[in-house]
Image (tube, rainbow, N blue to C red; front, side, top):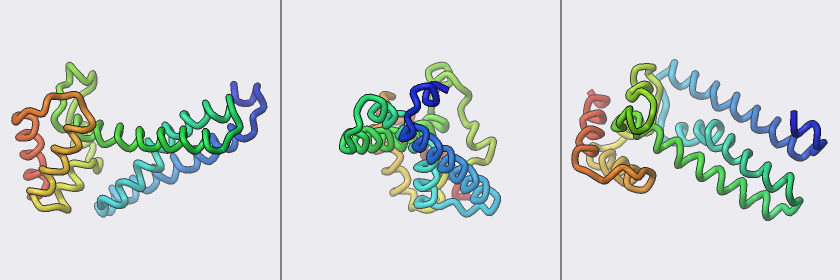
Length: 164
Protein backbone atom coordinates (compact mmCIF):
# COMPACT_ATOMS: atom_id res chain seq x y z
CA UNK A 1 0.00 0.00 0.00
CA UNK A 2 2.84 2.40 0.81
CA UNK A 3 4.39 1.80 -2.61
CA UNK A 4 1.05 2.68 -4.24
CA UNK A 5 0.87 5.90 -2.21
CA UNK A 6 4.31 7.06 -3.35
CA UNK A 7 3.44 6.05 -6.95
CA UNK A 8 6.83 4.52 -7.63
CA UNK A 9 6.25 2.23 -10.57
CA UNK A 10 9.82 0.88 -10.50
CA UNK A 11 9.17 -0.32 -6.97
CA UNK A 12 5.79 -1.81 -7.88
CA UNK A 13 7.32 -3.61 -10.86
CA UNK A 14 10.08 -5.02 -8.66
CA UNK A 15 7.53 -6.25 -6.12
CA UNK A 16 5.51 -7.87 -8.92
CA UNK A 17 8.59 -9.64 -10.33
CA UNK A 18 9.49 -10.86 -6.86
CA UNK A 19 5.97 -12.23 -6.30
CA UNK A 20 6.37 -14.23 -9.53
CA UNK A 21 9.76 -15.54 -8.39
CA UNK A 22 8.40 -16.53 -4.98
CA UNK A 23 5.58 -18.45 -6.66
CA UNK A 24 7.93 -20.16 -9.11
CA UNK A 25 10.29 -21.12 -6.29
CA UNK A 26 7.44 -22.56 -4.24
CA UNK A 27 6.19 -24.58 -7.22
CA UNK A 28 9.72 -25.85 -7.85
CA UNK A 29 10.04 -26.92 -4.21
CA UNK A 30 6.70 -28.73 -4.28
CA UNK A 31 7.52 -30.46 -7.56
CA UNK A 32 10.96 -31.60 -6.42
CA UNK A 33 9.59 -32.74 -3.07
CA UNK A 34 6.96 -34.86 -4.79
CA UNK A 35 9.44 -36.42 -7.20
CA UNK A 36 12.22 -36.57 -4.60
CA UNK A 37 14.59 -35.12 -7.19
CA UNK A 38 16.05 -32.07 -5.46
CA UNK A 39 19.76 -31.69 -6.16
CA UNK A 40 22.22 -29.02 -5.05
CA UNK A 41 21.89 -26.88 -8.20
CA UNK A 42 18.09 -26.95 -8.01
CA UNK A 43 18.21 -26.16 -4.30
CA UNK A 44 20.24 -23.00 -4.97
CA UNK A 45 17.86 -22.06 -7.78
CA UNK A 46 14.89 -22.56 -5.44
CA UNK A 47 16.29 -20.55 -2.52
CA UNK A 48 17.40 -17.91 -5.02
CA UNK A 49 13.80 -17.55 -6.17
CA UNK A 50 12.34 -17.69 -2.68
CA UNK A 51 14.36 -16.41 0.28
CA UNK A 52 17.07 -14.59 -1.67
CA UNK A 53 14.72 -12.76 -4.05
CA UNK A 54 12.57 -11.55 -1.17
CA UNK A 55 15.51 -10.17 0.81
CA UNK A 56 17.18 -8.82 -2.36
CA UNK A 57 14.04 -6.93 -3.36
CA UNK A 58 13.59 -5.58 0.15
CA UNK A 59 17.11 -4.18 -0.02
CA UNK A 60 16.69 -2.86 -3.56
CA UNK A 61 13.46 -1.06 -2.64
CA UNK A 62 15.51 1.14 -0.33
CA UNK A 63 17.66 2.21 -3.27
CA UNK A 64 14.67 2.60 -5.60
CA UNK A 65 12.88 4.93 -3.21
CA UNK A 66 15.94 7.00 -2.33
CA UNK A 67 17.99 7.14 -5.52
CA UNK A 68 17.42 6.25 -9.13
CA UNK A 69 21.03 5.19 -9.69
CA UNK A 70 21.21 1.77 -11.32
CA UNK A 71 24.54 1.02 -9.63
CA UNK A 72 22.95 1.56 -6.19
CA UNK A 73 19.99 -0.62 -7.10
CA UNK A 74 22.26 -3.41 -8.36
CA UNK A 75 24.53 -3.22 -5.31
CA UNK A 76 21.69 -3.37 -2.82
CA UNK A 77 19.96 -6.15 -4.76
CA UNK A 78 23.17 -8.22 -4.97
CA UNK A 79 23.84 -7.70 -1.27
CA UNK A 80 20.31 -8.81 -0.39
CA UNK A 81 20.51 -11.82 -2.69
CA UNK A 82 23.74 -13.05 -1.08
CA UNK A 83 22.34 -12.36 2.38
CA UNK A 84 19.24 -14.38 1.50
CA UNK A 85 21.27 -17.36 0.30
CA UNK A 86 23.43 -17.26 3.45
CA UNK A 87 20.36 -16.87 5.67
CA UNK A 88 18.64 -19.91 4.15
CA UNK A 89 21.70 -22.15 4.41
CA UNK A 90 22.19 -21.09 8.02
CA UNK A 91 18.51 -21.73 8.74
CA UNK A 92 18.75 -25.21 7.20
CA UNK A 93 21.83 -26.09 9.23
CA UNK A 94 20.36 -24.74 12.47
CA UNK A 95 17.25 -26.82 11.82
CA UNK A 96 19.48 -29.87 12.22
CA UNK A 97 21.84 -28.87 15.01
CA UNK A 98 20.39 -25.74 16.55
CA UNK A 99 19.18 -25.31 20.07
CA UNK A 100 15.44 -24.55 20.18
CA UNK A 101 15.94 -22.20 23.12
CA UNK A 102 18.54 -20.19 21.22
CA UNK A 103 16.96 -20.05 17.75
CA UNK A 104 13.41 -19.68 19.05
CA UNK A 105 11.74 -22.34 16.94
CA UNK A 106 11.46 -26.12 16.85
CA UNK A 107 14.37 -27.98 15.27
CA UNK A 108 14.18 -30.82 12.76
CA UNK A 109 10.95 -29.36 11.32
CA UNK A 110 12.33 -29.63 7.75
CA UNK A 111 12.99 -33.32 8.34
CA UNK A 112 9.54 -33.89 9.82
CA UNK A 113 7.92 -32.10 6.87
CA UNK A 114 10.20 -33.98 4.43
CA UNK A 115 11.46 -30.68 3.03
CA UNK A 116 14.73 -30.68 1.17
CA UNK A 117 17.36 -28.72 3.02
CA UNK A 118 21.02 -28.03 2.38
CA UNK A 119 22.37 -30.67 4.82
CA UNK A 120 20.05 -33.37 3.50
CA UNK A 121 20.79 -32.62 -0.15
CA UNK A 122 24.55 -32.64 0.17
CA UNK A 123 24.30 -35.66 2.40
CA UNK A 124 22.54 -37.53 -0.37
CA UNK A 125 24.72 -36.23 -3.21
CA UNK A 126 28.16 -36.01 -1.71
CA UNK A 127 30.64 -38.30 -0.12
CA UNK A 128 30.51 -38.31 3.67
CA UNK A 129 33.78 -36.38 3.78
CA UNK A 130 32.57 -33.67 1.38
CA UNK A 131 29.21 -33.36 3.14
CA UNK A 132 30.85 -32.90 6.53
CA UNK A 133 33.32 -30.39 5.10
CA UNK A 134 30.62 -28.33 3.37
CA UNK A 135 28.40 -28.24 6.44
CA UNK A 136 31.30 -27.46 8.74
CA UNK A 137 32.43 -24.62 6.49
CA UNK A 138 28.90 -23.28 6.18
CA UNK A 139 28.36 -23.51 9.91
CA UNK A 140 31.64 -21.75 10.67
CA UNK A 141 30.88 -18.98 8.19
CA UNK A 142 27.15 -18.49 8.63
CA UNK A 143 26.50 -18.78 12.32
CA UNK A 144 27.85 -17.57 15.58
CA UNK A 145 27.46 -21.01 17.11
CA UNK A 146 30.83 -22.11 18.35
CA UNK A 147 32.62 -24.51 16.05
CA UNK A 148 32.34 -27.41 18.46
CA UNK A 149 32.84 -31.10 17.85
CA UNK A 150 29.36 -31.80 19.28
CA UNK A 151 27.73 -29.62 16.63
CA UNK A 152 29.62 -31.34 13.82
CA UNK A 153 28.83 -34.79 15.26
CA UNK A 154 25.11 -34.00 15.33
CA UNK A 155 25.25 -32.83 11.75
CA UNK A 156 27.32 -35.83 10.69
CA UNK A 157 24.83 -38.26 12.27
CA UNK A 158 22.02 -36.56 10.41
CA UNK A 159 23.86 -36.83 7.10
CA UNK A 160 24.63 -40.51 7.64
CA UNK A 161 20.97 -41.13 8.54
CA UNK A 162 19.81 -39.46 5.30
CA UNK A 163 22.15 -41.61 3.17
CA UNK A 164 20.61 -44.89 4.36
